[in-house]
Structure formats: C-alpha cells, structure tokens
Image 1 (cartoon, rainbow, N blue to C red):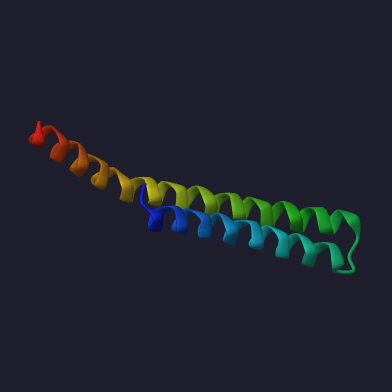
Image 2: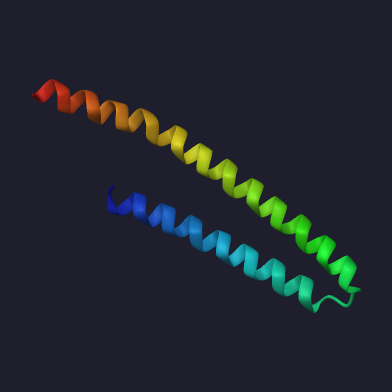
Length: 78
C-alpha cells in the first residue's frame, strides 16, 4: 500500500470521525426532548453507517482491478 493510499484512507476515517463528532455535538446542544434527540441521533448514525458502507464498497471495487493487475504482472515476471 502506497503512502498516497494510506493518506486517502486516513483522510476518509478522519472525515467520518469529524462528521460523527459534529453531528453528535449538534444534537446534544439542541434544546429538544430526550426522545426527539435520540430519534435524530439514531437517524444520523444510520446515515453515517450507510455512507461508510457505501464508501468502503466503492474503495474495494476500485482496489480489485489494481490487485488483479498487480497479481497478473507478478505472475508474468516469474
């Protein structure tokens, strides 16, 4: 894994952490009942989960052709 790939994944993780932190902080500081806050928090966490899953799938789909190419090149050089 190259330095650029690690930075991209690290940046993505940092983005997710920041998004979760910001959403949680916003929900906790909003003057609503506990039930309403929990409902909103659940919705935000579900959306964050769906976003993370879709990005993970997208990343895996992008990596697959690269890995196949590298595998083919290593077989060809042997």
